[in-house]
Image (cartoon, rainbow, N blue to C red; front, top):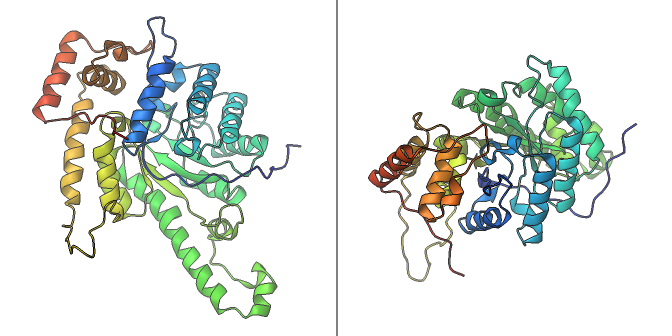
Amino acid sequence: MHSSLSSGKKMTERIRGVLAPVVTPFKDDLSPDRERFIAHCKWLLSQNCGLAVFGTNSEANSLSMEERATLLDELVAAGVDPLRMMPGTGCCSLMETVKLTTQAVEHGCAGVLMLPPFYYKDVSEEGLYRYFSEVVQRVGDVRLKIYLYHIPPVAVVGITRGLVERLLAAYPNAIAGMKDSSGDWNNTRMFLDAFVRAGQAVRDRYETISKSQTPSSKSQGRSKIQHPKGERALDVRRSSDADADGSFDVFVGSESFLLANMRNGGAGTISATANINPAAIYELYIAATGEVEDPPSSVSGRITARPDLEGLQSRLNVVRAVFSNREFPSMIAALKQAIAIYTDDPAWAKVRPPLVELTSEQAKTLTAELSVIGFRWRKIKEK
């Protein structure tokens, strides 16, 4: 028997917007560089960018479990707000996943980004369901918020619609959303239609029915409410005390799909290039959600022009294309090289084997291409 879910001290808040899978700096001996890591995380936060530490672009699967745990402890000790974090905790080892996830929950992180166990290929949906089920049960904390990580180009083992349906039905409070790094917008839209738009329709229907009930029928509980077939899981999320908004949040794995994602009910993006272009990505996110950080004064009568959403998206795509250059050994190496260039800190270029750094010629190419597109590094905001 697994332990029952504990109540926990407080609930974590839902995290939305722009997050970076934070690149991990290394010292000459290839150990993680704590000081540079913390400094980069604080810079990202100053640019309104959340922290998906230990993601793909963090070289997380080149880090040991102990290294990940130590870095997370040090981030929190340095005063970085856990509610701005979504650490990657998925490992091939169930027990390591449980340990890292428990640590993140105990720190009060907003959620965890969880890869499926990816070493064994062609595993069944039942096997994946058992894996995630074991994690939820063994962590045993109602604060747990899992964001499933679908990245078939790298992990090969993917997250299916059927798996999400089963997990939501069993653990409606723990399964908070997903990151889709398939690179296929049709796949993202399928998840949005199945779990975001459908979920909103169910919640709207629930509220309408609830309002129409008499006080006596309401007091008799949810058994009086009839639900359309196949919508039970999302409706359970709506009525939960632990997670009353009932949402399933979908993040895209590239800002190239950010505008489309927001227009279809998505939650934001967890993107590699947020490591170097966070403010511009956040600008599109805010514009797409219709939010204005500095609204026009009713006294002055200033009129704010409607933002050019397509233009903002196009400019992001241009920057993304530079780092996607297949002449570079990896996007990770290119991102680190860019940070090294713009911070005038060559140590940032180092990656862990089996990855390799850009050659001097490739570094020159990157510098030239960024100059051509007029890319500007935004320094940390002054307090």
